[in-house]
Length: 352
Image (cartoon, helix red, strand yellow):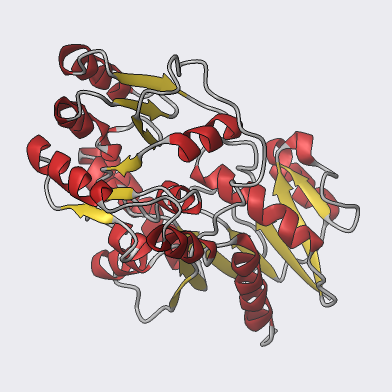
């Protein structure tokens, strides 16, 4: 029996890491693993939540609990590059999943240097790496000397968001009014401000920008909305899954002008609902969306509006293109994601 530790510290976090953990953790816990004993680092309130066959390490007491259980760890999977604890011994296989190198474009000065050094050290300590897209793998290999260390691409999955209740958000005052929708953390890399002047070309539509808005960029975005939004652009803040389902089902299009994405979960979620997706042609997005999106090559308002108008003119949410996009997005699922990681664990443990 081999002992495999998987770090699910982000289970309660409302970000990409948390979304992945909430989908992967229960599937891994339910998997039949006759030769593997699972050890999981989880938030304190999740201890015991996934069955008694698992050994739990509390996020708040990681070092204390690891010392207490005194189990030899054969494989340690750090599920993101921001982990705060790496354990085991010299014989423990270290697996690291890298989600992006966005700090190369977002950070400056000493903050950028700190991130560069931290990731270099973490990758150097790892025996094996996975990346969440080919774009991220290429980024790693282009910036760091990996010395021939292998990197496999295992794409993120998409949860079954389309299954569940729908609820109209309170900020929707008139259901008959056509609208566009986008979602993501309200951070500069999401590039949401480019959508505001574009909306002058759609005088009958509203635009709802949803997501965690506690970042500094949200204040700049509010200023631009106040000056140029003509009362038809709403920064709505966080929404529930029930509200997100309603918005996906009723929007005329999903708009995603992001500049930096290691993967890009929202575009695939939108496809599940038959939405026409409009995306930037930057970072991982062309790889993830493939031919199932229309792309902006630049962010000039009139050009962006023309791409949207042209794309919508032939779009039918019940048509063959929409069905094809929905089927394509179903290929990115957490059952496949879980199977691939279990297969990788078994492969890495074979030589032990």
